Image 1 (tube, rainbow, N blue to C red):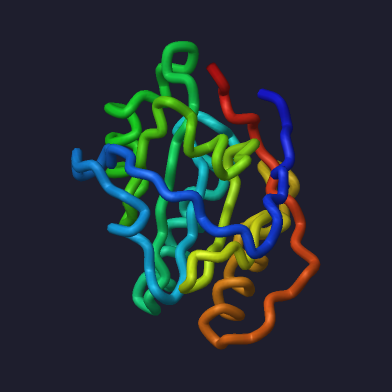
Image 2 (cartoon, helix red, strand yellow; image 1 turned 135 degrees about the vertical axis):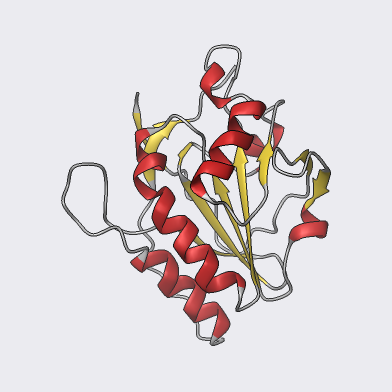
Length: 184
């Protein structure tokens, strides 16, 4: 495990389009199929990263709170499954069921989507407005495994609230940190 921060894609960047297999529904889904006209949260995660395991429950709770308000949630795993078989699509499907994901969990086998988003770590969060322009990128909150800070999604919840309330987005956005994406 190598602790890696987000690359912090420039705000205002348009969301790169993609079509990927959803390990939950076994269907090919495109960004336009699953994005929202209010806001769309794209998360680069995986099964085995301790930073993702640490936030899973809070992400599921956050999705339940904000999907009902019209925000779309999308999870993507881009890890090299040849060297990290615990992140395989079959195990992604099992993990999604076990964790209670209410959002697609897409598999980026070629890693092209992670590269298009300049994703660096798991978890890595990208919140796009209704026009699919990047409004927030960074951490979920200040909690990490073992630091005894409550995992409540404070930073990400604030960003989603600002978008829903049409407030100007705050500029102080702290990078997410986690395991590096396992590149081929």
